[in-house]
Amino acid sequence: MTEKTTMSASTGKGCALDGAVVAVAGAGGPAGRATLLRLASAGATVFGADADAASLAEAVEAARRAHSGATVTGDTVDLLDPAATRAWAARIEKDAGRGRVDGLVHLVGGWRGGKTFADTDLADWDLLEKLLIRTVQHTSLAFHEALLRGDRGRYVLVSAAGASKPTAGNAAYAAAKAAAEAWTLALADDFRKAGGDEGPRAAAAILVIKALVHDAMRVERPNAKFAGFTDAGDLADAIAGVWERPAGEVNGSRLWLSPES
Image (cartoon, rainbow, N blue to C red; front, side):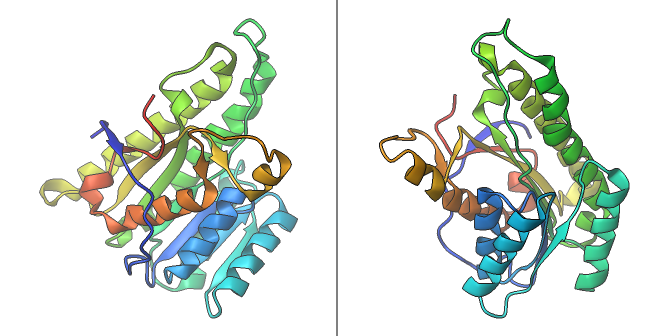
């Protein structure tokens, strides 16, 4: 299933994530911080990873303070290292003691671009291929088996509208996002096949946004309208909402949080 599906950000906390074990890759950024808070509020045991130890520690502490009693852990992990990524996945299974992982949310980001196609610097591609594609490959392979062991495994990729409608100056970024989406859809097909006639028990879904906005951006640019942008909190709600829908409904879907391009 690869058709586009429009999705509104969920505002209800629900109980679909209560007791779930969820890993968040790229947890130190604004989207990661909001996602840790949202997952912890829903009762999940959350394991965040980021290359920036200081930002990750701040995000983890904020989630713990906001939700007393929540289990939120941070690990500084080089997700460009496949062995380190697999070790992180194994550590989560061991520490959680559940014999499974119920979700991996991929929030590792980065952007490079130019004004025109001819201005494209292929050094931008070298960076974006690592951040936007390699980390998807490494996390999906590392968590694949653990996601299949439970009955609510979810792999959630956050992508950009530009992946399906690239602009001249955004060639490297759009191509990297499109490749990450293709890889995630291949994972979804694997989940579909693993489910057989009963349908998939795990799901890989893509949340599509135009761009992200958060409080620090609003403070920095008080007169900006950020038209069509998705707030980090709304993105976190939508991520949590993926668990509120059946695996067969979201597996292999591109779920739009902004108007479709």
